[in-house]
Image 1: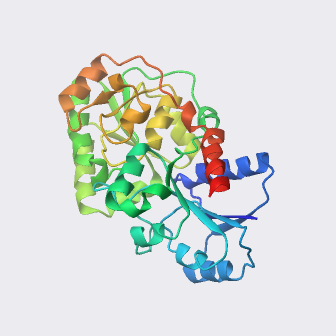
Image 2: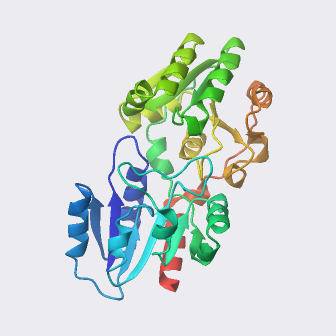
Image 3: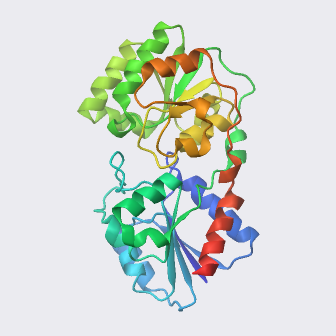
Length: 323
């Protein structure tokens, strides 16, 4: 039996795409599994795990490797696997699971195998925790292109540029505001796409709130989306999408933009060189280079197919059958 411990799905997080893609693949492969959504209080989750009667040949798969529930899962028989998305090993974007204290090294030691989004992720873990190097497998993220394309509009808006990452320090929001000012002065329209709860976060954070107001003064439009479908439709209007952050282990927003026909631009380090052609990349923080790329956007196909769910989960099953 495979036990799938899935994180809570919300309109604004990526776990919905991940969880749905995995369930679909398990059903397609006719794999017997039990879905255990990690909802409710942490105490209730521990009770749920503790009540399960499991066997040594069972497999446990967690959708989020950092969840401290692994300390209780580790006491059950069977092999343990999980997907690590953000990483504390990153200097720029420590992994965060709201309401929990995370102990990355301690949690990771409990797994037989850990799947990561990129070679960049693997190297971060190997450098910080050399003893775990053999347990790390680059699988990519199961990115469902069809779900994204279903909401694609037929036409673009001339000279429209989108930012679609969090408006926060780790995503370099101050760089975004300065870049937006340059772009708007050059005649472009610039929008920042965000879910409604992000606006609430901005208003509750002094620094973000100040930069939000500066962005508005400079003509940056904040477009709030209540659903993923609305977000995809708005993103599909953009001709260019810009990632300022150097914090990602894989940028879902970049993949979404490329799928919807926008030209993605991103820093030339981290995981981005793994899936974006060189001509889409710029040196981090280099606004002049970004402006050059925007004025003459590169025309090059982005290889998103490597993140098709069936490709990613084929790597999962190869590993889980080997261990």
